[in-house]
Every structure is written in structure tokens, then in C-alpha cells.
Length: 160
Image 1: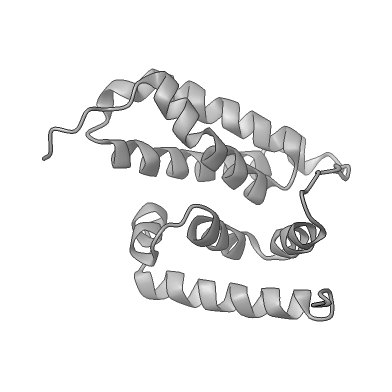
Image 2: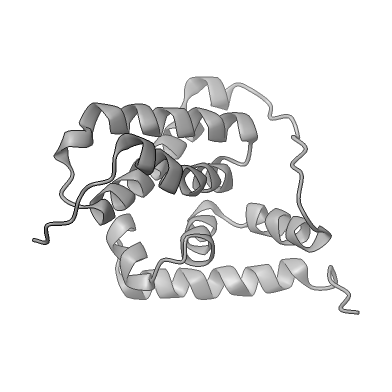
């Protein structure tokens, strides 16, 4: 075990807040739900922060809790009895908007691996550990997600 200094609470929030929020948004599809998940994740972190062995352990824990809290929203009685309203999300370019909406249309398991692989720059091995799935499963899901994205984006882009 290395003698690495654990990040302070402020440093954890600064370093991982974007990751938690974007993963929550990717999984829940709405800003309000993503914000709820974000808040719940960091409240849980404050309660258990003294149990971490390393900064990588903190990151993995935050990802796992974000996924679990997102699942909890989908299964809540309130969610099952409401109709979602479309929310306007601002993007810096038209291309990002197309890609974002294509990713949102993917099944949840594909959205998750795409987000962790491309947006969080995690390896297949890291993703498999966090999601508790075989590396071959993650590889297959990435392949299928890419194939689905290619079909969804077909004809959407015009390269000038």
C-alpha cells in the first residue's frame, strides 16, 4: 500500500464533481435528477469518507454510488408515476448536441460504458472492476454501443 495522501473534501469535490454530475446526467437523462443524484452521492461521501484507502478508491466508490443512486431514481415510485418534461441543455457546438442525444438514446448499459470509457477516460479493466462485470462483457458492450451510435448518427453529420 502506498503512502499517498488522501484528498481533502474540497479537493474531492473539485476533482470529481464534473465526473459524478456527467455520469448522473448520462444515466438519468434530466438535469433535475442528475442534480439529485449528485447531491446524494456527495452526502454519502461525507458520511463514509474515513473508510477510503486511496484516491483511486474514492473515485471508484463515487462512480459506483453514482450508478446505484441513478438506478434508485429509475425504480422510485415517484418516477414511475410521473411524465418527464424535455429539458433544454446548452451545448458549445452543434456536433456535441447530436452526439449527446444519440448517446442518450442508447440503452442504459451502453450509455454507462460509453460515458466511463470516453468521458472519464477509464480503461476497459477499470470499468469492469467498477461495474463488477467481465472485461469481455465491457468490450462487447462498447462494440455494440459504437455500432448503435453509428446507426443513430448516420446522416446527421455533414462534414464540410
